[in-house]
Image 1 (tube, rainbow over the protein chains, first blue to last red):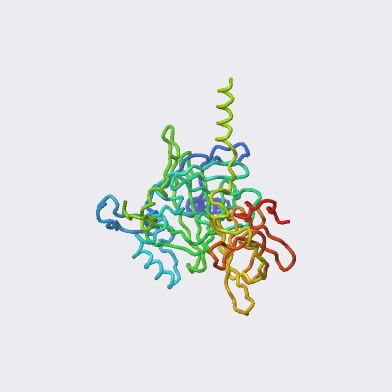
Image 2: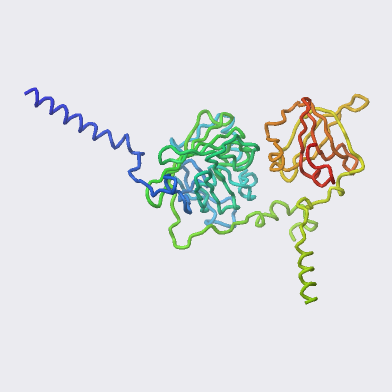
Length: 270
Length: 137
């Protein structure tokens, strides 16, 4: 009788654990990526996000374009958002600044003028980027404006100068690449909707292979000047699998020359 | 044979090494005949391309304070010379060794900064064009 009770309890325990297990390991991928020579997962390839975070990282409905003539083609597509918990935890005065940014985004969004997109916006713009992986350095080469990120896996130092793309130091946590980026100028936006940060920004990214052609990407944003606590964006990244896929040129500085410098021309508009 | 040699010579001249700093001439903006040595306090500095700018409060002979703008190298050049964004705190007392601007304003190009502890920082930039005066020594 006692043995039966013990077996019953044991079976109940296993069943309960079985129910709990999927919840606890929901984020643990069962996938094991191919390895590169040093035994680390192979992240080499051309990758791109497939969501509307570039327009607004928070959940948002579709909306009209700020450029009337482009009509439906530059209207804002809807998005379920990539912010974990949906809402960015702004400080009250920073939220007011975000709303002012948003109201004046046509004048203020730095990406319009081909300024470098920063981190993590460069990872979810509608442009591909190539990850080139070696043991000591991992590079990301973006199509947008030819922006480049160097992730230092060795010889790690603090940012010697502030920049648009920041200074990235990386390490491996199992099969996850963890990148810590600081040394930002504070001049980039997170999206086209005015979501912003200061020069105190620190971004911690986690990139984990989840299938042969997808990565799980998370970026945790810390900036005590702007936010009341750290917050995280999460999204899959997709491999560009077509044959011959490559990063093409998008030298946008030339495209915006008239927009940025036209007022200095001897005969403006010519 | 002579034509061949002439061709090689012409091509050689075309590919002659152009000084990497020839994007603008030192002498167009600054006066090598008017060196300056000024002592003052750093109030602001911009670590930017193509040239960094250091804003330094200098007290003149009458005791009035004038803020000078001193040009240095690009961020990459400064970093290669050991100067990072953390090297010079605002308020640092330093001596500027450089040359006056030709336009008569309180502006100059910096060759070195001499710090209170005797350390000399080479600023790179336009000062690299000065013959025999490159480097911190």
